Image 1 (cartoon, rainbow, N blue to C red):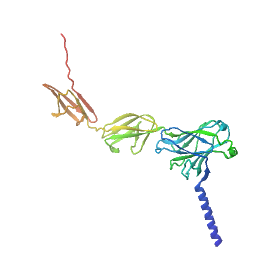
Image 2: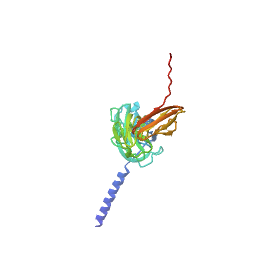
Image 3: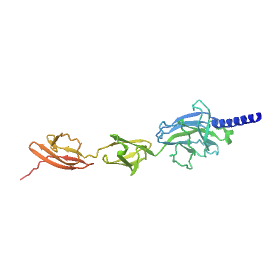
Image 4: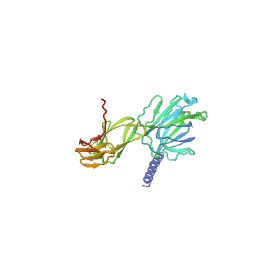
Length: 328
């Protein structure tokens, strides 16, 4: 009975130990760590590193448009032609806080690949499912998406195990790396309504596709067309441009469907609208639908005009004084 008890305790301890080792991931040492911070608009950051160094790539605080990272490597002549010589790795869930002074780390190796022969090579690290850049003979892409909860990506270089004997011969070799964020070829449209409406008051169509205002409106860069259709406001049509990786704000002044009237006439004219005096200030104002009579009086001279106002229409009445010259 006692033996069985110890056997169970032993097995439990064994499985606990396995779980602990698995949870802690892989421990490794780098020669030096370089902190690199990328911006949200594809600015390139360059750094010179050694063969057994690492990068801690800090991501922008706003990653709305960031879909991945691009690392371009310039490989020195001493190792450019060497086969199976240099490895690059991406690590997940680094336990320690990366600093320039720290060299010992532990984490989960997400991906590791050999750097192919050649003087340059580009590595893409996807950060979202929207990343759509494909591999080419001059570039590679890791097949997994790193966990960015800590807002950084850990990138490591090292010589392959088969070439570790040569480490001293190449310990002073340096590579030039340039790092930048990969920005989606889209922007966001923000509609600035005045006055603030209810979503049920109208429908928005962009390039003939109905859009919901409850979601961010992502659009490809370039020119687009917007239509506002409503039973409560005047229909509107706009043409606008979206810039890659930016928010474009489009002001939308919602106008009621009641007809409007603007009267333009000399300042000394008196105006009656349906026998009621109105100010002569040329400002547009709303009127009711139906027939209206406008009377202008300048001295002893009267002019009377009538209009039939319809919903959703605007009217301008322009009184001009003219003089004719006759020559005999």
